[in-house]
Image (cartoon, rainbow, N blue to C red):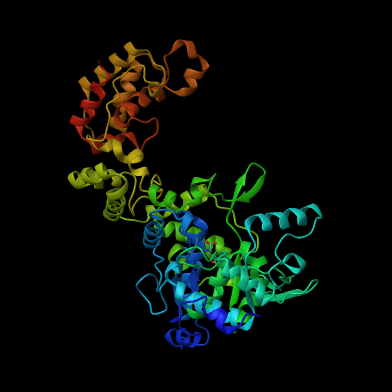
Length: 548
Ligand code: GLU
């Protein structure tokens, strides 16, 4: 063990003692059941949907128990930091309504960026060095690579343990000599784990778990020639969750195997252990098998995907809550959003993220909103993602309301569910706005179904010449029926099928011609309602574009 003076000389002379931090961050004095939770996103990339999922659980458990929910930016890997990541986290939390109670400048247990907590970590590293629970390791990259290679060759577990831990038992003289040479070092934890030992712990989701005890002397403080001197994840987890007075750590299941190490660290530091809940990862169905959602392969793995597309936050939250606790998926949306999440009801198998299901939920949700509400939500979204649309909606608010009214509203038994996300608006309703609509004038356009250009032109000309903006749907449609007959279309699809060579198509194809001309699409809301909403002049302008 090193002399205290030698240890202390490695640190700034004014580095506070642990009691200083303990007093600065006192126990919170909350109710016995209050949960203090935290999300620890690393700004090495944008927020993953799994991060949002866990954050939502964190927020829910904290708020329903009278606790607090913290977002702590785990930025100890500064080389891999992605610019703008923290802004993206904040935008994502705001969009989905899961803002933390404590983060950045809000809250008394910060700083909430690990890179700003160097002094705190150093205090506790020094403490472990003073007691001999940690030691300096000067092993070079080459030495470590050699150790790993030899372990692999003899099929031993890789790591820095037992006889492989070459600096664990070095004499104070050897350490001093290395220090005198100015060699860089890391600080390692002296694991108390023994071969064959098992660690038992209780997970709030999975119940009692048992794992091989940790024997690895994990690094707790990274290389001494770096500045700032930052800890590894394991050490920061113990120190931060203790001093932030977190009592429930909810995180991905990939950390289960680290629990034995973490418990050793909490014990060595004299910290009370925290409760753990390890969440199963979100999965994706691919062919016949399931795999974890992958940031690299799946666009929907990024929270940005949902924001950019403009999925209503409520629908996404509702959907995700149903994945956490299946029971919540059976409740109506408002109830599901306010009903508490239960860790005991979380599954241990990763739930499937099914975008089709989410879109259905979103469509049902949007169908409950008023036209005004839809326009205001779209405008807000479009301010970032489709600025041209904001102008159109502002300039043509009445048209937008009229368009949204088509086959919608409380008196409609089966309201249209063609808006799942705000970006659908252009496709589903853009044609209602002359400024967004592109006239269909190319008579060979494949949307027109391959009818002969001459026939299209003649049909369109006749339709425009005799067009009446009739209120009655049957009568209005009668105009198409009459012209279809005149231009040789079969009176119904059955007739046409029986004798396809005798007709250019049936009444269906004739109506489709008008549909494509008015909406630019082969599928649309009720044609008569569309024509009425557009008004006679606009109908004529569009149909005449086909005359040529
Ligand atoms: N920074 C860690 C990660 O992004 C957080 C893990 C945890 O929640 O403890 O995986």
